[in-house]
Length: 110
Image (cartoon, rainbow, N blue to C red; front, side, top):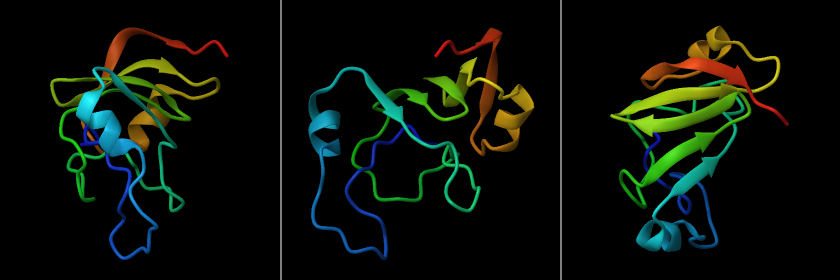
């Protein structure tokens, strides 16, 4: 699941060095990740297990993607708000990890 902050190494890719993720996971109390919901191949980035090297475990509390806003609770992505024009079915189809749809999900106000 994407509850693990990772920001400095991608297997098989050359990187110049670590970024700020290590500083965040060492001291931040409330980490919110803003990201695209899928990769360039249309595959979910909200995963059951994280396959990348981990910087921190269990430190991400919320995720904001181009499809919606999620709380991370009990190992699940809890959908709280939908991006404009996005349906719950759209989110379900593009989320690999456990998805829980909160009661009264509404559309984000931008």
